[in-house]
Image 1 (tube, protein in one colour):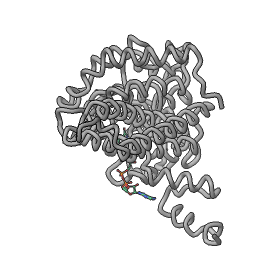
Image 2 (tube, protein in one colour):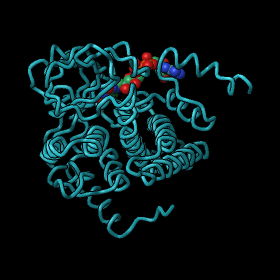
Image 3 (spheres, rainbow, N blue to C red):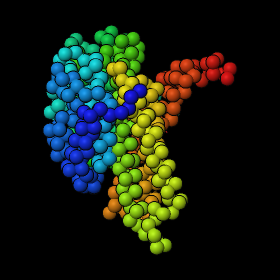
Image 4 (tube, rainbow, N blue to C red):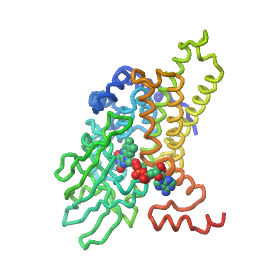
Length: 403
Ligand SMILES: Cc1cc2nc3c(=O)[nH]c(=O)nc-3n(C[C@H](O)[C@H](O)[C@H](O)COP(=O)(O)OP(=O)(O)OC[C@H]3O[C@@H](n4cnc5c(N)ncnc54)[C@H](O)[C@@H]3O)c2cc1C
């Protein structure tokens, strides 16, 4: 695996850093304080070609790889976590699923929206179906050429600001027989797509997470993007595409941690106690060394996963990378706060925001525990339990019982 950046990739990373430093760094604290979605930042990302950077050129994008997108995302998150996250969702996850599995019409719709500045929303999680996502109860009933969706999602990133929604529901045919889980496209503002309560999130407050309630939302059948092929295939296709989002989310965590680390490095050289810069204390040097080691491991793991894409990142590598990056981000941002002393704990300084921003990444998009289950199932060669019965079968499987 060649991880040496080409001259073009070095140029891309420099351009991303320049934009982030010039346009986004100074706004990050205000975005956190006002909890306002950063439309100005989105406009600048759009001008730079970073909204829809991974969309094929034939649809108006740059045709960039996930690896290149990761270089951009890290630079955004290094100065502003919210902008990093927008960059992920404009290049990975829902839009990747649409561009891979969609019909021509669906691809055009998705590409046009993202290239004009939309950050799509992906609607999976429900109050009673979190990690056990396939236990969702939102249903789509077929009536002629239309599906009628009823149910409730929560913690949907972009609720109220996103235009394109990729909605997952149990699909029933006209006889009322279940076909499995499918994915539909709908636009924000469509009657029946109701934005509920905004979640009072701990960090990354510039992007809303909300409930979304489907009150007999009518979706034409040509907006079924991931048909329920077999009982679970539509959902499995989504999870394949979702591995790109896991790499993206891990990269936001990495960028936040890198930003916090650099701030700590500057601070320890300037701050004097006992008549010398605190960087001279060996205990702190070892803290910094541990942070640098963890950052390097997380970056390599993420880049390895991004480079494995064919067309999506390998599930095992993506899970490993997200675990390493999200846990590194929690450790590094917390240690950076510690190195700042009381200033780290102050809202006048950026460290407390960075700690809060980093906290979500071991939870959203597959918790660190559930991703470990995925890793374990891959290395043991067992199936991932996805249902109550499936879980019981998996834990009682003879191959595991024998060990
Ligand atoms: C900031 C943020 C943004 C989000 N954005 C979106 C979004 O855009 N779209 C969307 O659909 N969802 C979104 N989510 C939801 C997110 O994907 C879920 O929170 C996540 O999947 C976990 O589900 P849960 O919160 O219900 O926790 P639960 O599944 O209830 O888990 C609770 C605890 O139990 C553990 N656990 C559960 N099952 C197992 C198991 N089998 N083995 C071991 N441990 C287990 C978990 O790791 C966790 O520690 C977002 C969440 C957050 C915090």
